[in-house]
Image (cartoon, one colour):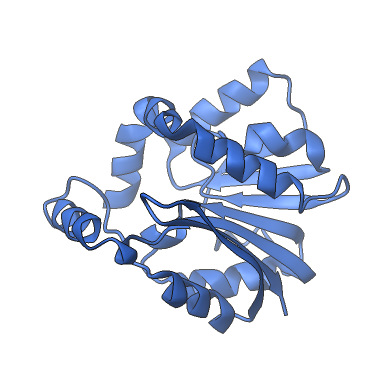
Length: 206
């Protein structure tokens, strides 16, 4: 188990409580995401956490495969899905590079609050592009803390002392460039929340 996995396992029991302090942002993400999905879509939710979004959109698509590096997060997500009798949702303690997921398997890949936590974003984005069908969509939400100097410095310090995982200080232009360099074209880019400079970006596999 690596350092990041340990951190998220430890955080899992409090994750929903922490995230729901910003419930409106989640509502906005879910509402926007639904507009891009079709009832016959096969979807991958990369970094699904406790299923806050997967469980809400499952009824709008054919199947969701939801993955996370934290086994504790997955246990919580599975329990919530079971309580709601959601049958088209497959949770797995896994990564984007799991060989079970084949090229051209998905109509859409969701990646919410994840890109800024990845060690090598470019390689992960290339893998996502590979897994998408031709014309498939990457739907993401990412805080661009590079736009906020104080927040960037605070989180950099917290990461150095191990309070939080290392966080990439994206600026929106840099984030868009990074996505485009992985053979995507931007469909939509919009700021969800000014205080954290969180951006909702939809990109299509080119």
